Image 1 (tube, rainbow over the protein chains, first blue to last red):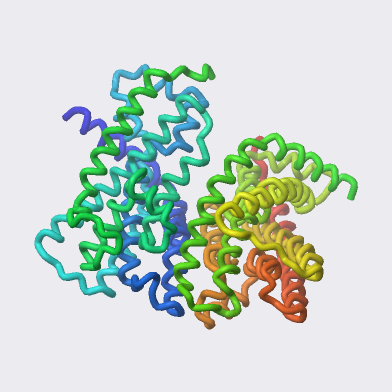
Image 2: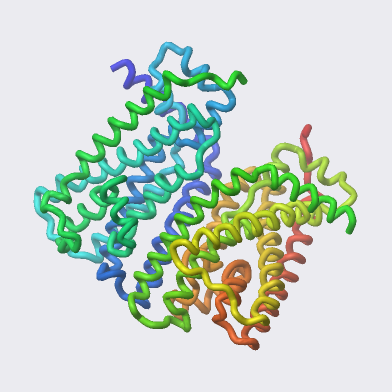
Amino acid sequence: MNQVRLLFKMWSIQVRSQMQYRFSFWMDILSTMVLNGSYFLAIALVLERFENITGWTLGEVAFLAGMSELAFGTMDMLFSGYDPDQFSILVRLGRLDQYLVRPVNINLQLFGSKFMLRRLGRMFEGAAILVISFALTSIHWTLWKVIYLPIVFLSLVLSFGSLFVAGATLIFWTVQPIEAVNILTYGGNETITYPMTIYPDWLRKILTYVIPFIFLNYYPALYFLDKPDPFGMPSFAPFLAPAIAVIMLFLSFRFWNFGLTHYSSTGS
Amino acid sequence: MRAFWQVVKIAIRQQLTYRTAIVAGLVTNLFFGLLRAALYIALMDNQGTVNQMTANSAVNYAALTQALISFLTVFGSFDLMKEVYSGGIGSDLLKPMSLYRYWMGKDLGKSLINLLLRGVLLLIAFNIFYPVELPTRVDLWLLLIPALILAWLNSFAWRFLVNLASFWTPDAIGIGRLAFGVSQFLSGFIMPLRFFPDWFHQLTLLTPFPSMVNAPVEIYLGLLDLPQILQVLGLQLAWFIGLTALAHFVMRRGIRRLVVQGG
């Protein structure tokens, strides 16, 4: 309980400090919305010409994009301490050593160290796209769908978070952030904002069996939008998201703990 | 002029020390290139041609825009701002050349290496997945060179102008993110401009941004005939003159009010 109070204390300090620069804060929110929203805007504009993308209408694509952006923004706010680019600076400058000698759990400190309020911009953007989706599609809501929607959202947040944790763990060995990790995190996010039908077979196989992103957003979307499954997966496929998220989170923290025992300071 | 080339030479040498980082970045560019290619193909979905663009040229469009990212610094640069905020700008201003030309030299050196290492290597790597086509007509190659140079000049003038905001406000980084987000979108980097509805396509052509990415790519892909190419080059030149003049005007006013603290 003490730990939770400490975490909230750390967050509230950061919120207060980040709100000191009001103009800069709102500028950041606005620029994040424009920057990330422009990808969806581009799709929305070209669909005026093409009408649909492999049978998916604008409202249906908006469901994929909205869920993914909202979840990624939320994750980016909570897991920024593990953001490989940020974490690399921590290791390079030897600041991680300071964290390690404090009598508080390292993960608690990392979660508390960077609470990026400006990520709200991406969350607003994702939420707005999701609202557009609800307006353009007529989802047949059932009780189970209402319950399952936040579960899918949470699964996406935790899965993206696991990738940040795993990416940060690699820094223990490499010190420098590895560019290719961005493919999994930012690339993964963009990949699942489009229907899986657009990808060549080999890429979809990777997204099914290696990094099972397909079950996190695409299959849940098929369920919510009552669309048929073109790949003939078992009928429970839309409900795998929470299980995959838990497994990814478990594995990434196992990897993290393993990496931490192998950490040797840069000595700076 | 000799001092300028000296700056370019130093920048080339500096950039060459990051060889491994450049090659590592290729993987990311390649992935996003393939992602865009899949998206464009799916959008066109056997439509034949869209505004003279075939599925094949759309795939090549994806490859070329990724190949040009670091040559044209599509995502924007914040180096000058940081120099202003750190006070390092003081020593830049002591140099026996204009601030604009000094930064241009640095940018040129970096961009040239990026064009050769990152650009060419990306096209070679992309070719493993989809056939990358080269312009078959000699005149296209000849006209592509001024188009690329003008695209870079426009991109540099725009980025320099945005960075000048740091002379007035401590929040220039936020302004920069917003400005570069807009230029990325309107330059044709995210989506071929020809895919947009005609009204929006025409709207983008009223801005300087298509001169930065879309123009050389369309020339490369052979989407324009000779009179159209000359028109595009003329437009690029006009924007270059306009943006450079504006950047110089703003720069002079900025320097006059600049106060360097410490540094």
